[in-house]
Image 1: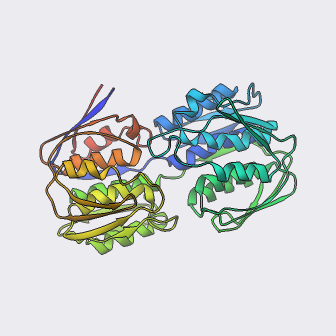
Image 2 (image 1 turned 135 degrees about the horizontal axis):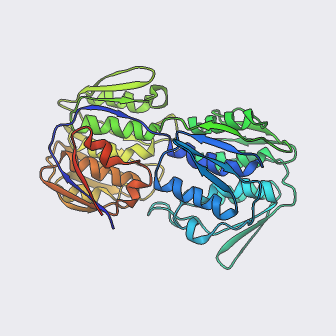
Image 3 (image 1 turned 90 degrees about the horizontal axis):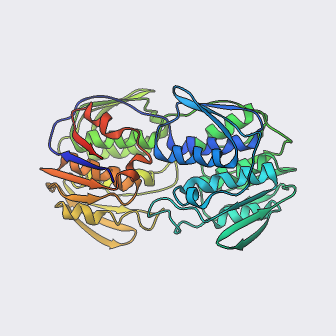
Length: 419
């Protein structure tokens, strides 16, 4: 299994470009099932989760042609309606194929989706199942597989008891081909949802309210194919900003949309990071004498849970104590045990809260990446640590960050991939 070897303490500088958004790409690929026509996807990130997602399309009978910066997908000839257990076990986002497959064919079967340790078998899918049922689907659980049947989906009014990005996107896509007008309430507000709705609308869907708590979908009989350019990845952009701040490095981040990361920029200002931002870039100037600042993760436009782990590493280098409150995922703070092994002063109050006291020097250590966001946080810790850090299970990092070692080397990082 490949690993990263990092020699910490080396200065970084330069420019890095943000790639296509993982969380947008993982929704537009399943959306290809809604149309019999071809969709062209551009600015598609070359990451493991995208490869697994395309494998699901191919396994269902879709035709895929790779292009220089993306692919084309045609799902006119779907040959099956069962999502493979082998593929679903590797990808939490496999649940996103269910709604479009059900809407297109009237039936869908799938196992409980997998993914990383914070996803495999632990993140409930009740919102999805309740939504499909509200649209008229009959659901059975047998032989460790969910079986859904709906000869014709009917529009519904559905209230999300928990704000869910994937739940919002899934039911929005499913309702596109349902009969009647669906009203989804307490929806997530993420910009990826807006981008997905805008694409579907250009191809014939009738969606209004995306980016607000209430989304209205007037069902249509069919939608066309088209072209979709994946937006810049705001989580990757935020990660690079924290890399620059943690290493106190002058780094310019291109394809950085400040309007998508206002919560992060506000926090960086409070902790003392000096930066300049434009409509399409962020330049970290300096991060001397960082001040501790506690935060609570929250749905968009609040502080993203996917940036909590990198931010926790940053706080190990700040003066004072900061309370980090993770409100989205129960297991996301467990990685802090590895930071304490490197010398960080972190007290876990409960599964949702830790107190980080700093600044503390970190020392290189042998680590294992438990999930995607904790994995990239281990990389950041290794960059600022003294000595050699070895990170195993970097497949988890490759799931969301394209060629991250090569891109960091271009900034001056001493990071090597060992196959």
